[in-house]
Image (tube, rainbow, N blue to C red; front, top):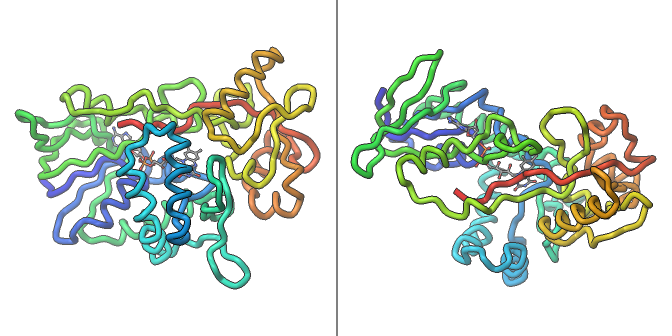
Length: 331
Ligand SMILES: Cc1cc2nc3c(=O)[nH]c(=O)nc-3n(C[C@H](O)[C@H](O)[C@H](O)COP(=O)(O)OP(=O)(O)OC[C@H]3O[C@@H](n4cnc5c(N)ncnc54)[C@H](O)[C@@H]3O)c2cc1C
């Protein structure tokens, strides 16, 4: 096969890219499983946005601080400054963010943010965003999307990628492309406990290593402090950070608080690990009741439902939570 651009993956990064390339280009997207099976569909809490210019310095500082000032300042600036346009794009695709009674966008808060800057759609923000991106991509005449079609190798000559090798119906096929985009997401599938889909096994990273493509910050792996504790072998279920942003508290085995719940994730995760070691337990507790019944029900319906399925009533009792691998920020 021949194409102008080969995009590998069907998460929000791959889809957003496909929507922003010229329509004169033929684009082939390949994705390892069904198109909906990406971490982008799993994102719960929300997406940050610069609300007004006055918030820029504080937003920048919060982000740098959460990254221990190791962040690439240019990337941080780009992310913050482009956020209003990206949000506008998403709204134009039909993404329905929560609104206030007067119709303005409603913002919530998450750990490490000193202001409310997070837009959300119930507790399934990623699904709401990504399903609209996918719908748009499916309408594009210049884009072909092949599901259950993993990229298994690159075609490289010298230091130039000429395309990729894909696997369809157990057959390997070569795809020649002028540009190849690796948007294969994270590495959670390599961990025992992760909130990610198990098929996300860092394939783009692996191929990059094979062909000496420069990689950066591979040790930047985020452990999310709060996933529902279970002894079942399944993808860890996230108790979103915005739950703590809205007032949920963390408790040790005796029901005492032991950390400021709004500190950055790595700090909260470390405090939980220490507490578990001290108490000799496999989890700590998260109590959602301080948020208030109505707010819990309207803001976090899917968390409520999932906990119920697992036998916990968040309106009546604290739930057991444990840290798990969550984001991979290198690549
Ligand atoms: C439970 C959970 C909650 C989250 N909540 C939030 C949140 O509230 N806010 C936020 O900003 N972020 C959140 N995130 C993080 C966010 O979801 C990710 O950062 C983002 O979705 C990554 O997008 P992506 O397109 O890079 O990768 P993904 O969405 O993971 O997509 C990767 C794609 O690559 C495909 N792929 C992988 N290997 C191959 C291969 N060899 N060949 C072909 N295709 C391949 C996969 O099938 C998939 O389609 C959350 C993540 C999780 C897991």
